[in-house]
Image: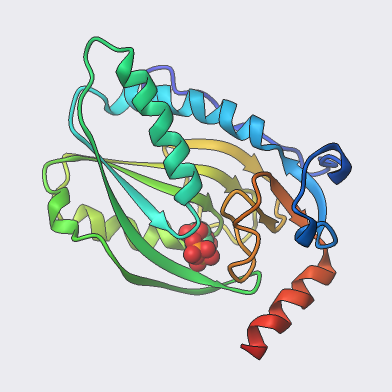
Length: 223
Ligand code: PRP
């Protein structure tokens, strides 16, 4: 594969950055431990991923399939970067979008069962170059469930871009084609990564305090 860039590996002992070095919404300031991946670094990495994707898949109509909810920010920023490259290229091809809603997590645990809750009419993927855009590959169960669903509709090519890949003993061994960062086995939130739907509205990827897990788990049970 032409010049695919390596994932940025974040070590097991990476300390992260003090929250005070960045702007953090007041409502989340007590819930977070550290800024783990600053938003600017995410954006810089996405710029390169966009180039990798177009080198591999460009020249043909690409259907970008966003795996909701977690991937919506990565999806938007990756496509913006791809569009910028296309605007400055002599041989751009169309990019169309679709969305699929998949869910497997409750609190901070993968439930083990992947549910497709709705979205794309996958028959429209037949004969297309399909780019599945995911926020994180953790156990790999979501991709293990989703890939056969997409493949059975006869796409010309399928690639997966994931912003994060987690190093975890729970991994089934699945590796995406394009990966932004490889992270240790920690629960992260922000940049659309959630804890029971909170923290998506945070621009940096951050680690969560244990107290926050109790706080937001409790809030969900009360609803
Ligand atoms: C998260 C994440 C991935 C999946 C990865 O989704 O967005 O889709 O889990 O985990 P896996 O590799 O162990 O399958 P979640 O179920 O939390 O739904 P969300 O995207 O709506 O947050």
